[in-house]
Length: 465
Image (cartoon, rainbow, N blue to C red; front, side, top):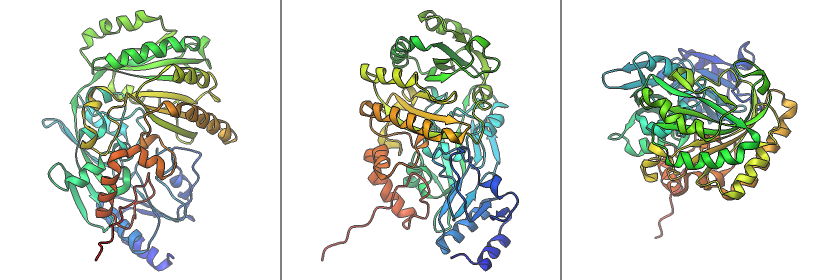
């Protein structure tokens, strides 16, 4: 039980802000990206610095308080928030330092992808991660970090050089390839299970402008497009990325009025090769079948990474289902065509994000991410602004996923999962799960950090006399 005395002591120990249910900004601070999540913590600490994080972790441990860690609050299952517990909110910790010569960026965990793009783009550099600029760097990185540049430069975790982390015992450590190597291995895909990461050191790549954007085709052409796309992306050079989608055209400019609210299929492209060669690279793509809409052209990296922000503002209701996918066979195509034509609301969608190319050339055993051999990370997202449609969007996503799951690779990208139970988590980490559970037992034996896709600490077997 929390007492007023120890809450007062916590408040006095902080340089940041302690927010409680009676505070005016409590309701705004407890909101996360997914409007379907409505949890009410007892305490929210908006940390100003590492000392605040250490203080908060010690408070949580000493008082046995359920604890959630929040970076950007984008998690589909709302795992950056909890009922009746403590939220360690890192959103005030936004320091970024770009070393242009070394081509690295030190980034505090409260930053969004947009913050990182803003800082690195000034130097003509970028690091691969994400689709929305509003996503928090903490959660997306720890879960893996896929996006527009995955085929070119790998996942975010493949470009993570170092992390600083507050452990469950309140100690502050560094993890990299030479120090706390087991922890560094686990952080790269193992989620928030091992502590509160306060900063990341990322490798950057020379990249300023890409040839990118969406191409859309008629829904009636989906089978032909999907078959062509599958063959193309499996053979494409690393410089070409593109994710397939079923979508409804937004009813506002720059989309042409005759396409407004029309269900279509499409690919969002990103080419990072020589811009002088881009038109030639895309010539066979455009010749395959004339798209109904072609918005592909040169654009700065930050523009691509924020292209869909306005379409998906915080507070929409989301229900996500996901799987890794190796092949899209005839049965799977039939299922996609059925449910792609039945999207229940204008924002509901299905995406197939390629994770071949550079991302596939890291071995499963080299990081916690266990599906390097998969071709795509698929997500089915039922989305709407009206909570009255929550059952409709959830049922569509569940039915779509249940029909497709037999043709999947098994597990799913943890950042696309709701709260789905231990079996799904084990399926996602596969052969890496036991090692993760052992590392969890070493660094968080009492499972303080369990508001996540939780990996339970491995229990030591009793030694027989």
